[in-house]
Length: 467
Image (cartoon, rainbow, N blue to C red; front, side, top):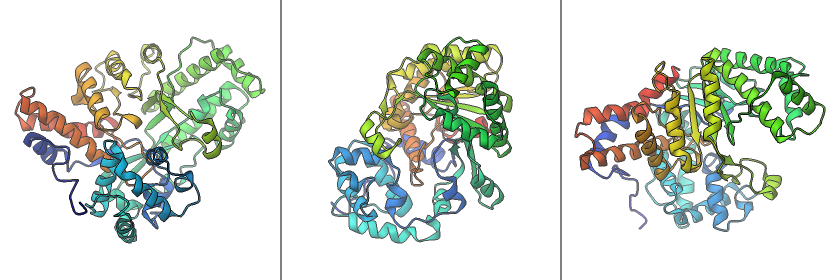
């Protein structure tokens, strides 16, 4: 049925309470997207896209994985096929994504940005490709325009310590109404077991104007970059780790381990874990000093397909959920910081849904009354940012803590068309609460429940981050 409307006003809202909660308390809230991987260069230069493939498919490994599953040749995914050919290959894949969140996101994004109700498939692909490409030439659909359409108030990109932040500086001096900040991502300085570690440390030293010959030099260089990021408005950091390392260590051990690595010697697994513990604790104590929020994204098993990693590089769709043990190390790490009164605001994200209750209960150990929701169980992330994952995260947090203090959704995306995911999250939230109002599990009090919806959608993040 070519003309059927799929994304209706009551999309995902299954009763009257859900609809009233969404319309009255969630829909019009501004967006604070406190973690994403958007290009600050594209925002600063207000890039316009020639076609939908450039803005929608480039870099989107969610879509790439689905296309590969359907037997689409890599030429039409990351290869040298034309942009139109790549879009046609994606359109042919879309009908086969039923029950995958990609089907929802695809049609939600087409409707919200371009007013397209038609289902995307092989038959409609040519029409939709031409229509969207025509609309993309309008000023309202430049990078900045796309953000404004979604009522984005603040967004935080993610940068390495060696980044110059030149585009953030340009944005800070511009008249762009949306606040664009950054998050400090020093993982390469932590991962001493990496084959490219010494090369990275040399680059960090050049940027920090410090010749890094010792562990003390490394700490000084990282401090200089934290100071630089802070001076440029940064108030968050982010770490993407398998798990938080925690091994007891002595300072002279860490000095020796760093020296071994600098000399090109092999660092053992235990030595690596001791080093990571030491440098992470140093960084977290420094974040506390600067009043930053620290984020830990934990539990990915990355680069599983070594053949394709060699061919295409990282972040191209070959990662999955891991089953690392998380609880004891997180507890010991946070406890060490708390015992020194150096635990800053912290957000913990898990990728393994089996860890939901572990993370949801862990945060309660370190919410000490000093700050509302000081330690947060982060929103469903990566493989878990779909309806089922969102509901499970909300339920675990509700059961183990106070979901009313939750700071809500983020995109964690590289695409400028991903902002309807905030709407998706809000609709799922409102439907969950509306169903419980209808069943009598929550009071039939729209103002009471609606306040929580508004807080989770916007107010809590606004208070927590104080942008």
